[in-house]
Image (cartoon, rainbow over all chains, first blue to last red; front, side, top):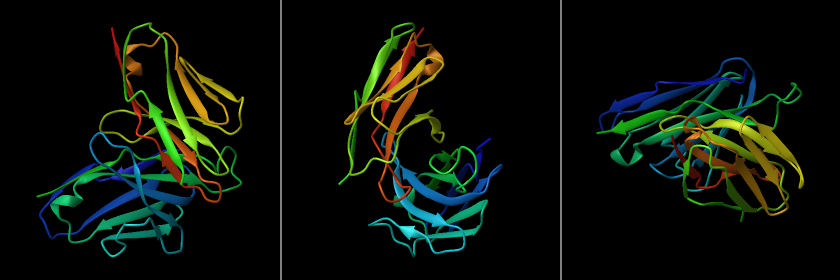
Amino acid sequence: GAVVSQHPSRVICKSGTSVKIECRSLDFQATTMFWYRQFPKQSLMLMATSNEGSKATYEQGVEKDKFLINHASLTLSTLTVTSAHPEDSSFYICSARFKPGLAGGGETQYFGPGTRLLVL
Amino acid sequence: EDQVTQSPEALRLQEGESSSLNCSYTVSGLRGLFWYRQDPGKGPEFLFTLYSAGEEKEKERLKATLTKKESFLHITAPKPEDSATYLCAVRHSNDYKLSFGAGTTVTVRA
């Protein structure tokens, strides 16, 4: 249980284009999904918190117009990198936590496999 | 401001050579300390959650302990497949956000 998937696993795009990354919880309903980015040999940096049916909350320094987050259902959140530039190249990882009340749920974030973005 | 510091940055072990990783933290109102394992190019894999000082959790060759200021991840008789980066994270008091440490990269040689 507690499987989170991401699609695509890697994407290469040209500078100026937009890229959409999907994050799905496969076997549970996720009240909250989180989006992180990770640079080589660095730890995870939280970008935003996404709750189903409401606007995402962005961390300080993260441009909400550049990183659009949509949490359309309890099993799907999407991150769109708009007008991507080479400095946006990174490893993007999502996580999800269980809907409160489910056995074993609530506290732990389960992570997806990540999406490698390369902007040329 | 919450801080999570992991040491050492890197650890090279011989197969069977037990060792410990440290995670020290300063956070107002700890609501959970989490250990994850991350393999290169993959997302973190959940290992343990600890909530209160004195708590211990075990899984195969791994054992996590918690005090009021730090947590240890003990690796007993490691095998090459235990090679990975181990991440420590703390949950903030009023929300479900996690603050991650920089990780300890463990390499176990056969």
